[in-house]
Image (cartoon, rainbow, N blue to C red):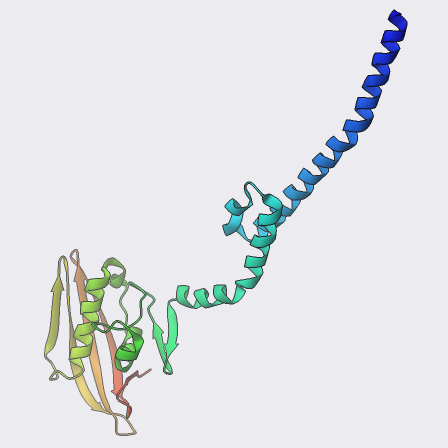
Length: 210
């Protein structure tokens, strides 16, 4: 009887092992495939890593699809991060300070397009200003385009101050009015100056002269 029981138990263990081993193997295979696809998707689209947690197979396909579909959006955002854009054939370039649309007291490019070219006259010290201070500096530049030669247009806000002055006035070869401007900004005891010449175009916009 003891021998028969031993044989019966042995056969039962063999049957259990025969049935369950492939199931465990299949589950292990599925986990390995999901893990591999998740790693591939993570390397392709890092920003969607959390989307893989808890439903990795479905989330991985979504993340990969988003990565492929958003390439044009990424290219568009690159323009913003390069701190430049073009509006009505005017190149707006802000290598220092806050990056935004508009200029001075004008908060969109359509209203500010006449003066957008002045972003080319830049100061590294703008990195230390807040947006409100930077816009006041730009507003002084706008006012300086019509101020008498030699009259400084000053501004002050908190620990920052500055001025924009028309130092010279003349004409270019086409007869357009041109002005040389001096910009000055002081913050925390640090002062920086920049110069630039711009000419008034027939359409009312200003163009920086090289």
